[in-house]
Each structure stands twice: as structure tokens, then as C-alpha cells.
Length: 225
Image (cartoon, rainbow, N blue to C red; front, side, top):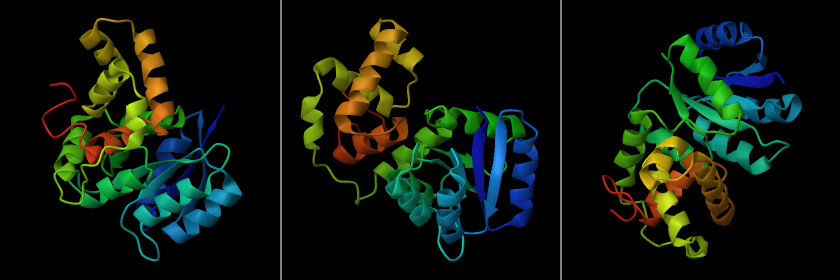
């Protein structure tokens, strides 16, 4: 299946550059371009992209508001939003993750990483593994706006699932969690799926945001540490 991609950025040169890179791949298809978030909402409804590459700072409607509206309006499947930013320590990126984005990329990302990032998100994963993303989430989890009230959904987790949740929040991959817990990766995948279902989160990014906002983990400490 070809992955349908919508590019949303107020700079035409950036849109053209990303289109050239993505259209060169046999499994990727850029179905449209938008200059701001308001245009993106209409284009998402008309073009049904699998992945939306979303600039975070734009006129008319920024990437945060557009991301929240795209996720809220649903779809089959719901488009997955990959945030584009110039700075790796951008407070607005954290807000976009809270709004439902599945990760972010720097605008100067190498071509191969851009392509792989789009494929990764299209598969239902999230761009959470890079250390810069871990730093970003940890940095903004220190903000006073982050609450410490534990969501009632956490009580549904078994002790093992809670442990897996804490390790997800530290940015560990399924393979790394399997090594840490001395279990198979298949077992970890089962635990992760159950955690997502019980917490009603779509992916690892949303799980991490919930973990930090609930106080289950704090910067530098995973659950149980």
C-alpha cells in the first residue's frame, strides 16, 4: 500500500523539498500541500492522507490547533501527524504531542530519516526513540502545568503492565524492554497493546505524555526506580 502524505508548511521551498524527497520513494505519495492549518483541515477531509507532515508555527492556524482538530475529527484511519520544527527544544512541540501528534522531526533532517520517519508513523509507531525527543518531553514535564493527579485508568493496569508503562515512558523500545525484563519481545508487544487499550492511548507518544502528566514517572526516574 502506498502511504498518502499531506505536507503542511507556510514556506513553499520547504514543501517543495519534502515533496521531491518523498515522491522519489515507490511506497510514498504526496497527495497535497497546504500553507497553514486551516487549509490542512479541509485537505485532510478531501484527500484522506495517512500521514500529515505539520509545521508547528504558521499563520491563520498553527500546527498545535490543527493537530488537535485533525485528531478530533477522526477518519478511517485517523491521519497520524508528524510535527516539523526548526528547533529541537521547542516548547510548542510538547503542546503538539499533547494535542495528538505522533512525534516530530527537525526540518533539516537528512532525507533518509525523513522517509523512514514517515514510514514509521504510517505503520502506527511513533517517533519517540531519538534521544532529543526524550529530552524534549522530560524538559517540559517539569513545567508547573503538568499535573500530579493519577488517572483512574492506571488502576486497571497489572503490576507488570505498570512496569512496562514506566519503561515506555523512558523511551525504551520493545526490544530494550524485553532485555530489561528478561522476557521475549512478543510478550512485551502483548503487554504494550494491553497498556494502550486500558489507557485509551493511540501510541507511545500519547502514553509518555500521560505518564509524565500523571506523575507516574518524573525526569530521570522511571516507574519503580
